[in-house]
Amino acid sequence: MRRIMALAAGLAVLAASACSAPVPPRSAVPSAPPAGPAALPAPTGAHPVGTTALYLKDTSRPDPWNPDAGARELKVTLWYPTERRDGRRAAYMTAKESEILMRREGITGVPYDTLSKTRTNAVEDARPAGRELPLVVLSPGFTKPMNTLTSLAEELASRGYVVAGIDHTYESHATAFPDGRVAGCLACDSDTDPGFGTGVVRGRAADVSFVLDRLTSVWDRSGLIDRSRIAMAGQSIGGASALAVMVEDSRVRAGIDMDGTTYARIPKSGFSRPFLFLGSAEHVPGGRDPSWDRDWKLLTGWKRWIVLSGGEHGSFTDLPLLAGALGVRPASGVLPAARGSELTRTYVAAFLDRHLKGRPEPLLDGPSPRHPEVRFCPAACGSS
Image (cartoon, rainbow, N blue to C red; front, side):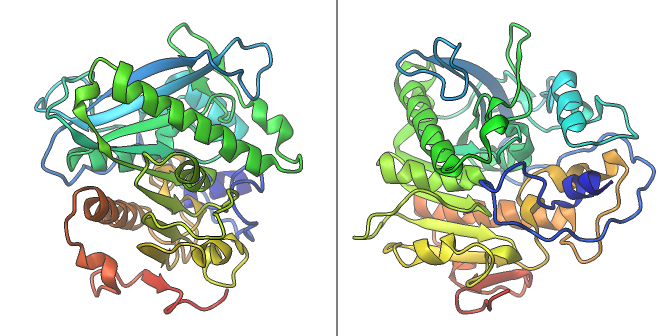
């Protein structure tokens, strides 16, 4: 039951300390009758959303987790503006991916294909609309598939962004490939090794740079992307990877870390590109994770440190939105799933609009009466 509660309420269900500082579990709450298939929130932007998947192979380097693989193979899901409003909505994940994820998280009492029935908003393989649009790379938490950031990806695409979500093969419980293979979490066998987190973000930085190479030159729709306007965001170790990528790859102009302990070392001379820390109460100054305090001092350009009151590690993902379908009531005192999703999408989009589109965003200048859960640190945050 505790595993179910953690997934549904957005608690620390990650399989390794590489993803976040330890979080004391909240008390379990009783289960509820399953509410039927979950539905992701409708995007608020002006554009309908299309989506497609690419399967890329990097033959220049070995896979860091599978010594028997001849190359690093990645699944990249793209979301983008389209003019098409009708058509088949994309699947959230395959039935097999749903089964493996639910089994690994210890979820019982509902059919194992439950997560695959989640309703999305993007039209599968719709023709993209526009040219030279800003690109946002998304990276998920450890053991979690890219699917868990779908609502954020759809929101950004509806606002005129191309979004590239990377499934980092063998770092998730399940990644399905078109030939029927399902790659499991080989990295989970190493998650207690010294330096594990540092190794993960280094590998993800290589993944991202390779994907950028392909999307901006080799991809047959590369004209859709403005190479001068690229940002990255991620949750948990995916957020830590955003910082790691920016340190290594100057093409990424701005970055967002959603509740992830950081591992990449910023040069002592400082780092001037825009960066947003967006976290739960565990990431207040002087809290359980000291990495944000360390890095904040070295961020010399535009920066914000925002904490969501009542937010937890999963609040920045789709996971709390799936609680009803899993038959679980959220724990008391947790930021409601819909509100957590709304705040995440609102502040991430505001940051990207400011730094990739050059739009003034007063929302990022300080507290807002419309969003009382949002605290701007360090000034408005004490230690936990």
